[in-house]
Length: 225
Ligand code: ADP
Image (cartoon, rainbow, N blue to C red; front, top):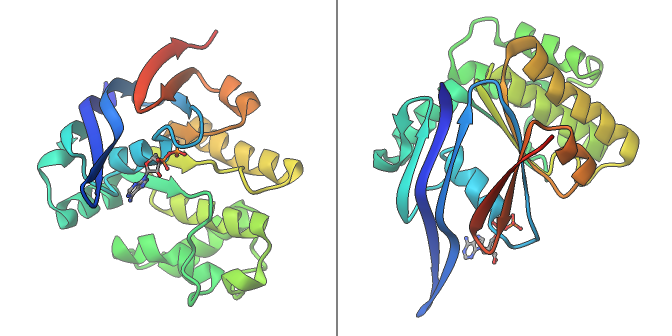
């Protein structure tokens, strides 16, 4: 079964009278449980593509079907509902809420799901990423690697069917990057979560089952041995 199906997807940004085609008729499918990486030069449209697939933004033309939901015909509220049901997202710059503690950041998706055990579950997830003793810290009181682990705990809190990660190890030292990588791959092993990783790191890409190459907003798909 395809958890994600992208057909003839294009994104055009308008700046003044100039049009910039960032994605140009992109097509690919991802099966439930697959581990995929998206690689390509800076500015090739990777982040834009990930945002469209995750329902964070809407396309100019074409279709994204996420776990059977056609995101293209939905408004922002409807897309948010599909995201809450299906998606975890890890950003390169962590994007934690600065006014909330680590624990409260992880609680956000759990509270959206109206889980009564939100606090206990968030604590359990912080422990899973090795930050059980950092719950009361605010993001500015944490290192980059710790912030990324909090953002992973937050993504895990959604029990996502599909996890999108945009350069999840990009801003981290090698050792921390390896820890983050293991946490993400374990989610696939333990829960069968589909992983879609945007990365510059060709070693990381080589560990995925399939690499999607993107250049100038167009896709060339290649199987990885
Ligand atoms: P990548 O992730 O591969 O580096 P991006 O998807 O971030 O590429 O960006 C692709 C292109 O789209 C870049 O030229 C970038 O400047 C442009 N772009 C991204 N977001 C916007 C936006 N909101 N408005 C206008 N142009 C944008």
